[in-house]
Length: 314
Image (cartoon, rainbow, N blue to C red; front, top):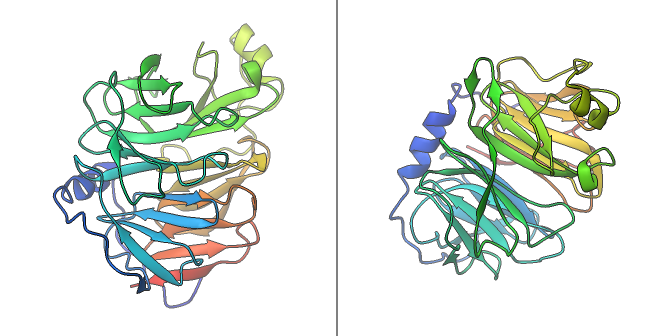
């Protein structure tokens, strides 16, 4: 992290949502490539499309040269983007969850968009994840509702899971990651970040449970669970959560306290970078390359979070 980076005040997810909704109606005309990227607006989502980088704030921007220059892309019809999802097996395909509700799809790297199919309820789509081994299967978290699934790249949707019950209340899902692990039913878990912490469900969608050491399926069947050895900070909102496709046991999370990482599928977490983190992404092939929006800058690490450099600083 460069010494010139300065802090900003903590932002609630409601503030992030409100700022995103305020962008409805912005021009949909792409700008020419421009040097630099301003994070004057809150970055709410980051994604890799192959080696290219996508960043959603008040605008959607794309860099094809590692952040040296950026192209402003048109917004999907219907308003501001809250979440992004891509898959390495579907280059240039981008899913965007909208603050006004629904999911938009681009097949050309974000330069044109079409509306997703029917079935989703009304409500902001706060989080998206493409299934780890099924690139046409996508999960969407709908504000005030629950977890929804499409098996045909967003053409139609079906409800799969209620919101988790955590800390005496049903909690909205703020972040999603599809993680290929041997202990999942069929080898897949859906990890979810909420306003109060981390949870997960196998893709049988039988029950949300805490991340823990040991055989998770045995614990799921017995109803007992060991506490995680070194969990994320209690009570903090998890604003973004990603799994490295090339190394699924490696997870990264963005919290108000900074960027955190786990190298054993969420059992033990360590802080990589302090600050107010709002979004992050990990490269689909190089699991050590991470991009994070923290405080007032877009930052990159190429060594799994040991060292960071600023891609953009106000």
